[in-house]
Length: 189
View (tube, one colour):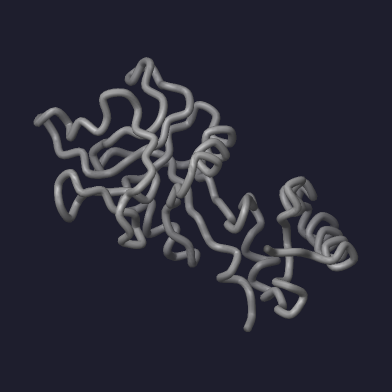
């Protein structure tokens, strides 16, 4: 479990809100996770303070939800250039968090079957275990087009009425995307 001393968090919150003008609510979350040290014995890197502006903290990760659109490969490149990767959704709580934050946008996630049709793997090469597919999905493009990448949909757009959850799509289509970076990547030994 990750904890933070109140005085330490207050200093960081002050620095970010007063010097960089970031909303304190995005720094210190009500679930107790915010800018922190691990078991009081590790230190934060300066990178955490500077590189998480615009990111949201939840459980043990930081998330960046894009507002622009790119294809799946370009979306992943964007995340990787920032020391992150496309999101891996590990459980229902994380899926619900994403859907609550996403509004009516459609976002790429880090799930693909480009290596072997029908074998869904995450960007860290782990096999899909829990899934939240929309009704009738994945459908593989119904033989019309390759659909090897996945988007998550909280509010169905007009083109996909009644579809909420994950949909397989062509990797060449442009959508918004979600990057994920584990908090542990910011901790010094």
